[in-house]
Amino acid sequence: MITIYLKQYNKIVRNADVKLFDELGYDDILWIDLLSPTVKEQKAVEDFMEINLQTRQQIEEIESTSKYSETENSIISNSNFFVTKGDSFSIEPVSFIVSEGVLVSLRDTESRTFNEAAKRLQMNSRNYPTGYHLLISILEVRIDFDADLVESMAKQIAVLSKDITASERIDSDMLKRINLLQENTMLIRENIFDRQRVLSGIQRSDRFPNDIYPKLSLMLKDVNSLINHADFASERLDYLMDAALGLINIDQTKVTKIFTVVSMFFMPPTMIASIYGMNFEDSFPAFDTKGGFWIAIIIMALIMGVTYWFFRRRKWL
Image (cartoon, rainbow, N blue to C red):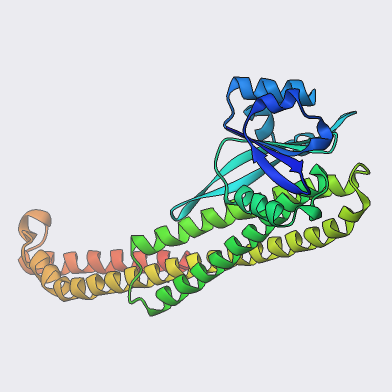
């Protein structure tokens, strides 16, 4: 699907007809948004803009040059965007190309970020005279949503902490909740780092309008703040995991203690049964029954003494 945002009558008009490319010029178009486009739509955009759209493999590359690069006539930037799926997230790569003041975006999934950016554009189109301004606006919206995710994650961690404190025992569901939050926090953190790399690349460029750079500095400060919050959330989850495992160890120690006490009740009867169940005459033929009895007691005492000495030497006792 293709959506073309046109500059007409001092406002932005949406259209989805690729035939417009035969009638309009670069000054008439602000944004071309491609959502899972067909081959025909991609070819029409490439011919009109005189660019080559990137493949998904190129968009997903992690090298710094793949996150932000410049050619003679265009700027290419790739970034990852979150798509929420229930309690978890998935990361979808998005490609941006700015050429002749027109923004071209290529993505495969619906995104709340793009819907909000399009809404802002139509509400106040004067704030977005070029595709450069629109690209910054999309990234700004994404940072706001990232902040919402970090805040939501902090609230979930706080609730989990209270549940662990109030719980009498830690079960597997509790550990799964901690693990899920850890994975989501790591994804958020990686995603915010990705945003930082893109903004840093833009800040080093001299191709953007001058009025954009002050806003870039503020956006980078926000991103750095989000990274600090994500790091704190990750450390807090590590602490909760350690606390949960500690509580599990305490429960296991209690169970072991019970079995130890129970076994102590059976040790004296077991020892008596073992001693008086021996055949002393056959075991010690040189002695009578009474002599064999005392020989067995002495051997048992020696074994116990050697064992105690060995444990003390190894500092196990």
